[in-house]
Image 1 (cartoon, rainbow, N blue to C red):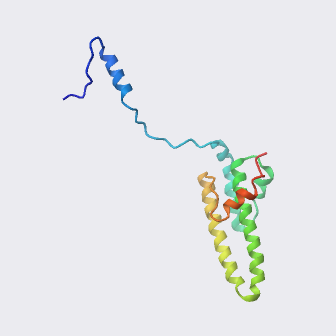
Image 2: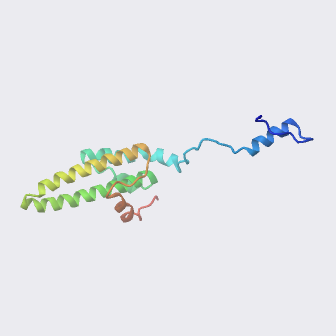
Length: 151
């Protein structure tokens, strides 16, 4: 048995090869889908990274992308970061109140560790160029700040 297709009368060898190529399905390696707005990501990556990185020294740099609103990627991460700050402020208020019953210190410590972990996750997402919501609070940011769009 041979692997060559049969030649019908009157068919040239070139036609035979073309027929074999068209009848066999093309198996190209599947490429990942193109990132939409990759130039948008590259332009906004610096502000997105700085928004998270400067949180470590308690500098609210995320306000810059929120005010400028000229890049969708940095604006997305600024909204996520704003939610981190709001959760932190609310947690501090609740912890201060609960310090009267000695549970506030434990709550504040747990909150700070939680916010630190979320900030690191956000920083990693910004460095990778991904627009993934932060665990637990990220969906709130998308819902609450959906009116803040690129200008």
